[in-house]
Image (cartoon, rainbow, N blue to C red; front, side, top):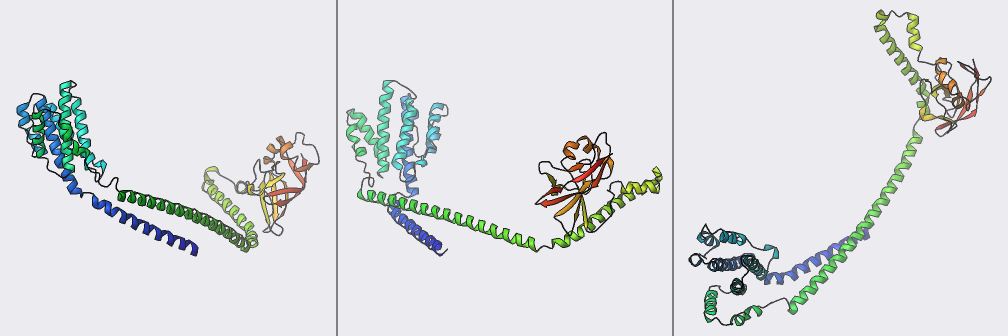
Length: 414
């Protein structure tokens, strides 16, 4: 247990150190990212200018110069209000990009977010027309939108983009390629710097360290589970031994001595209950005292009561060559025709015989080959017999839950 606690303390210590190192590593990177509000403000500024120019282009390219000049670009709401209601295609185009923010790119991805917005606008406008003139105008629009994106990413104002675009259109010379050089010179401040490579290596090492610690943690967890299983098995073994000791301390002899009396009292209570039921209906059926006594005793096998003898009724099991103790009954039946007498002084030996009441003999006489022949010796042949008489009781010996025949009974038939 001491070694286990020491390993846990060591694991927790290294975990804290690694987490602290990761926090210190990420602080310079976080410092280089724009605050969330500032980045969103720049995105909104670039998005407003990009959508404004796209709407104006969409209207002017479709011969709607007056509507294009009337578009207000102070806010998205102003753009929406200045688009005529009957221009459904323009309104649909505006609504497609009104709420686009592309937050799934994460923090510090302003350039990629605006680039994705321009790409989606280009895709949507390409669906409008397919002629060469439209394609050329659209290409010039995309160039202007890329310039707007670059100015926003660099933190410059986008107001000068209109003057630049007007100058390029009036000149009508291929100067757009020279004006796109700022896009090629857009600095990637930390992507290829030595500091970025160093931080990447340190982050990778931190991840590997966390993986090693996680592996050791699960390894220790498996060892603990095995120890718990061993402890549980030891506990069950001790509990089993304790249970056996308690069983040996139980006064079984005292219980066996009073059990026949309890059984006799239960039989008397049952007989008295039947007597009460018969007395309630006596006037109706006019039962005589003799008939009443016969009704009281008809369910019992005639024998003299002895507190030291326990009497049960059982059926023979050929596959066990004996009688099953857990199947003993307290009353006979057509199958349970063998009367077992067990002495409390010698509970491992018993005597057996066939019940004397012949109303229980019919089934045994019909199947005497399986119910009588393996159990007893015949003094005469059971030809047209209606009654079985036990001339000599047989002996039984208990082996665990089975009473095995040691001396067969002798039977006669009438």
